[in-house]
Image (cartoon, helix red, strand yellow):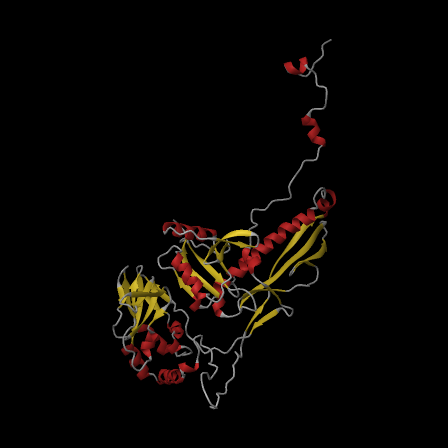
Length: 470
């Protein structure tokens, strides 16, 4: 009779095991494990730096002084091949034509615009020339340069897509000569509307003539530098002169921000919750990861939402352009100049921060660091520069950089939320049990409520078209 035996190694036959094998013991052991990890969790600096204001009624109203500045937006164009045309209705962005709605006349004015293409280095508008036209920039970058105080040339900034230059030439009785000129930094296209063509069309249009007369009747001296109605004051006087009477007028149609919402329905099977809850609570872990995703979406919306997001709600006069392409120290200085009243923070995509670092290194500059919420973060002029991956990078490799002044007392940027809501899990975030369906699946409604408001326009500045590539 023969018996079969399991094959054994030479060591096992020579030295039989005296204790349980580790491979077998692992079947009865509990491994040490981590909670579920999530790569999509970021630092979310924007949510951390914003002061949050309680919005009990669900709507936040921003009351401001009455502002008379109109028509300082950007002009849009369309094109067919190499031919570029201004959209007639977009001419209403010019201060002289703000509110004018006669489509036939606007089409005539658009048809009177003359296209000119330019190359880098071309002088598009010569300083000291007669101010006889308005220049509409369809594409490209142009440097505004004028004579300095000591026989030097002074740079007054950059104009780019949609900007316009010299609009006063259309309506001033004596436009005089150009104090500044335009020099091309890149190739591009401009459209020019001459003063002669404008006046000829105005002479044939009674509606345009009446509109321009009303425009001239507005007294610029009655407005301050921000377009608000001036508050009459007296100073430096002696004796008993009659003091001026005045009042601060308010905007009769202030903007209101309604809280936005991000929601999802979390589903967990009861079998999972009942049998697999040790050592980690499955419902809690599912909820934790879902809340993280909602907070990431919340920050994305605060940056990119077309109704209230920061990228779409910055005043057009608070947008500056890079002089060349990459973000240079000069560009960051221009950005801080737009938010010069105690800027709190600069937010940029990590690639934009890296591009700024390369430009600083090329100039032999080394930005310092500041202590911010327990972290040593890079800073420029003492203002923290924080990463925010929610700022988009376009297919062309360009992004934007934000500079913020924050807080209600500083008339800055504030986050909006509502605490104390039913089934609140975190501030302004609720988790509501919705029941168990016939498939034994539990459902939880997870909702986050939020928005963001810019209290005054100069609380937010944007550096646009920042090249982030090498």
